Image (cartoon, rainbow, N blue to C red; front, side):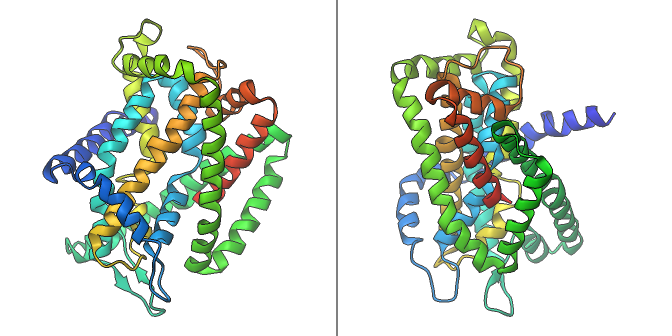
Length: 355
C-alpha cells in the first residue's frame, strides 16, 4: 500500500502538479521566463553588487545553486537515463522550462513578504507568504514542519548516502568515517550562521561547477561528431520513436520529471527561503535570478552529465546499476580510472554545499 501511494504521489500527481502548475504560471505570465531570458544576464551582473551588511543577490544565487546543485545533478541524472532511457533528458528539460516560471513566482513572493530580524538580515519563504499573504498561519506551520522533516532528515540522508557510496566505490572509504567527517565540516560551517554559509558557497559553488563543466565538456569535445546523433536519439526516445527505447516512453516522462524536480527543486519551496535573504531593488529581480539558477542547474550541469553518460560508450540500453556508478564508469571509460576519483570529489563538493 505504501509503495502504491509513493508511486502515485511521486509519479502521476507529481507530473500534474509540477509540470501543470509550471505550465499555468508560464501561460498566465505570458512566458515570463522567455520574455526576460536576456534580462537574466543583466540582472545577474547587477547582482554582484550588494549593500553593506546585507547578502547580495549574487550571494543568494550562490546559496540557491548550492542547494539546487547536488547529488541529483550527477547520480540523479544517471538514474533517469538508466530507468527512462535517453528520452528522460528531454523531459528534464521540459520540467526545467516550466519550472523556471514556478521559481520566478515563488522567489518573487519570498521577497515581497520577507521580514527583517533583529540582526538586520531578512527572513522569508513560503511559510511567510502563506501566513502574511494568504493569512493562513496554520497552513504555514504545517508547511514549515513538512519542509523541516523533508530536508532535515530525508533529503540530507539521501545526499549523504550518495556521497558515502561514491567515495566507497572510488577509494574504498568506510561510509561511517565519511559520514563523521562530513558532519564535522558541516557543523563548523553552520556555526558561523548564514554569512559563513554564504561565504563558503561563494567560494565552492563557482569552483566545483566550472571544474565539473570543464571536464564534461572535454568528454563531449572528444565525441563531438556523435553529438547530433545523440541529440536525435534523445528527442526520438522522448516520444517512443526510437526502436531501442520504444518501451520506455512512460518511464522517460516519469523519470525525467522526477529527476528534473529533484535536481533543480523548482516549485518545491526550498529556494525561496534563500531568495528572501538578498537585498534587492525590486522583488522581481530576485525572481529573475532564481529562474536563471534553474536554467543553469538543468540545461547546463544536468545536460553535461547526461551527454557524458550517453557519449561515453559505457552506457547501453538495459544497463543495471545505480546512477553514481554509471556516471563514474562513463567518465572513466573516456579519461581513465581518475575519472571515478574526479566524479567522487565533485559529488562530495556538490553534496557538501547542497546540505
